[in-house]
Image (cartoon, rainbow, N blue to C red; front, side, top):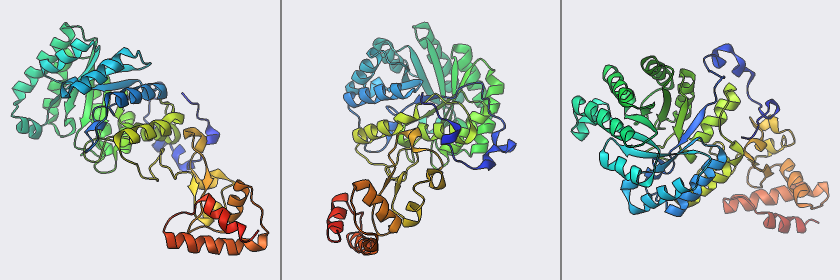
Length: 398
């Protein structure tokens, strides 16, 4: 894990208020269960190859992800091959398999040698109706599937209640209790539709903890439909969740899952909570996943965006020499380069800094003319000016 020091964090003193910091159990480290290879791949149009899944899994382990969901073997032969390769890699992370409460799904993992399985079934009335399930049949599926997994050599089972946040609470309690009695050691509280406010997430985690006791690990799995996945995950940690499930770049169904790197950064920098994630590797794995998925995240995306430490505005560039004046945390935390770029919004400070960066010399009385030409050309092109283009401009005034 990379060490983040206090002098690398430049957030508001208001975060030190007792009302902000209260409620977190800082005696335990928040850990992450990554589902990029399964739930993340459910992003529309994304299809990872076995080689890409293997490479991503290796990078996840390097970043300190505690648990990696290898995939769903019954989806395709390619997924089966990916799971087989990831299991054989002996990564420094637990490799978990995904299964429905269906014997065939479990058999596929047993054949591959998966030792840890997360198994799901829907628990909300609307989801059960969609599948043609009854409450009785769901309870039967849970008990039968968990027992089958444990009887056949699965070391740990995590029961995953689909649409838990919209489930009848009395029934949800019965489902979790049934899973634990059948042998499940862990449970997941799942906001499948991203329909839970952060305060509700905290409340539900506390409620589930009162049902299952202190010995059962609790996971939170949330989606980002209202742009609150990170906030909900933090609230879940405050409520007592042991693991946060999520993905790289926040990939996933609809608006995506919680982004584990965003959650880790916020927990560490805003709430002083210990996390098991090396954020210095976040941008590297983000690029790998983007390349494999065939997409590009916004340049302003938290943690991994290309332009988080890039300054175009002249007013901001004027403060570039004091990072804490224009940034909330050090670029070193996420191993990013700080740089100045030139465009429509540049100022004289931008010109000075870029000249220094490129080792160019031109008299100060020419800086205004250079700036004007930069602005005119960048505005006409509707893009930033490249360093080579800037050199050409400067050469006219040297």
